[in-house]
Image 1 (tube, helix red, strand yellow):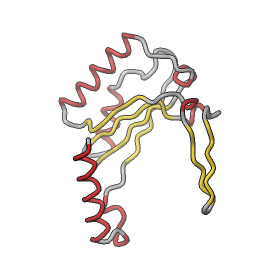
Image 2 (spheres, rainbow, N blue to C red; image 1 turned 180 degrees about the vertical axis):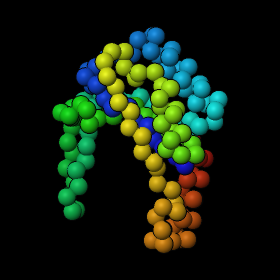
Image 3 (spheres, helix red, strand yellow; image 1 turned 135 degrees about the vertical axis):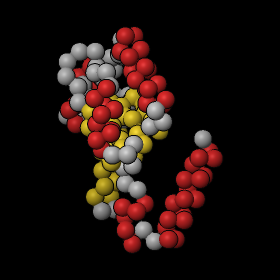
Length: 142
């Protein structure tokens, strides 16, 4: 199973403050543990929302909303993509993670990633094959 562990943003991350060398060292050590265990598929920090945008969909209409976005506690500052056996295992890994910010309270949300079988019969063999081809092209291009 794949899970995304998302670090909730803070005032500091939204202000563009960079982590300390100590925190970067601790996070690098944690990421090395994830890699050695073979569970880390990807992981990145994200720029503040002031550098981003949202696209709102209303039927056929598209509206672009430029950042920054008001609700800091609803924003994501970074993520890990993990391949683990269960939600419990993902939780255990994240409990070992250093506090994502140098000061204060942090929160990491863990969510399971949909797999092909989760979509049921609507995800036909033809759509599955098309998806497999897209994934192969993505892998080739990176």
